[in-house]
Amino acid sequence: MSSEFSFQITHTHGAARRGMLQTPHGAVNTPAFMPVGTQGAVKAVTHRDLEDLGAEIILGNTYHLFLRPGADRIGRLGGLHKFIAWNRPILTDSGGYQVFSLAGRRKIEEHGVRFRSHLDGTEHVLTPELAVDIQGHLGSDIAMVLDECLEHPATRQSASESLERTLRWAKRGRDHFLRLRGTKTAPDAFFTNVGQAQFGIIQGGTFPDLRTRSVEGTLEVGFEAYAIGGLSVGEPIPLMYDITEHTARMLPADKPRYLMGAGTPVDLVESAARGIDMFDCVMPTRNARNGQLFTSQGRLNIKNAEFAEDMRPLDEECGCYTCRHFSRAYLRHLFQAGEMTAGTLNTLHNLSFYLDTMNRIREAIVFRTLEELRQKYRRIFPAQPARADARLPRVNGADSTLEG
Image (cartoon, rainbow, N blue to C red):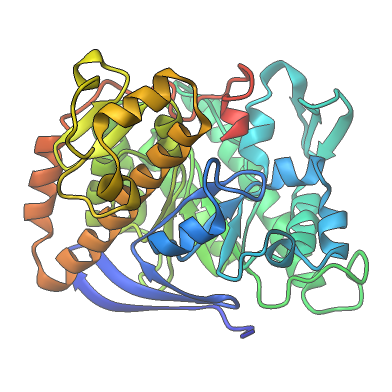
């Protein structure tokens, strides 16, 4: 296992970049999409499925793994890779977004965030230093610094105060991360962040000058790479693209850029065209479990009665396992019958579509045809209303934002 973290750009086309991200557990072709494995598993599919689909990196959730089964336990059992039997790269978020999603169950303090577990009501305090410790026990390839997440809309004053707190937390988290890296001052023998990269997070709401301030302050702290947070939380889509472009062009050209939590297939194409290298979103998996599928002809709701006797494959242009073997009529039947297989087959297709979209983006950058791909995706996925449910903090049960 290599201890090196590096990023190399191999091709550019306008602001878009194709590259290679090297981590201790292997390489990732960028732009890349990371399926979300909230609790150490991508819902409804196995790791074998993910490997067959070509997923090179997945995302794990610090909040959930901290509460259950416990980061220290995972550390004692050999780290997250060994615990879940996934030998490819893993990125773990800081847990901050889930904590802030708890609304009435949490209180923001300068020291950190005091919150009550959604599982049993026990009280915890998540600090920038603890977020580093948890992810060190998990042993992920990429760890995120703790940031403060704001709802949309946010006032300028609240966005400014939030980003300044995020900068102070970033400095504390980075100092702690560097102090513990490979030293004997680690919390215990099962902690390791050797080879782990730490990403800083840019905040600032929808205010360009605050985004600029956040970039300047986060670059001053200094991280292996940088993420853009606080978008895809209900703001108008054109505004999301504008803020993404404004922020991305200020980030270092030789480091990966990660847009957190976005989004639809067209969001991936549009954001890659603006210089983004990494994406994650629960949309392909959550929508699959709810019967909404992404195809080469646009969105398809498999619940609709029109598919009851439709023997065509879900997407005639798709070569995934679901489309090679099963009809729309059968997929609708499974969904209507409440069969677990419905979620599996739908998820396999949606993840295949997202990962294939990333392949198409990378090829379009190489062959300089990205504008044609953008126009195609705009046609098949026309603009939707602002996605107020995409990443808004809420706790509404098993399929809530907390559950991924």
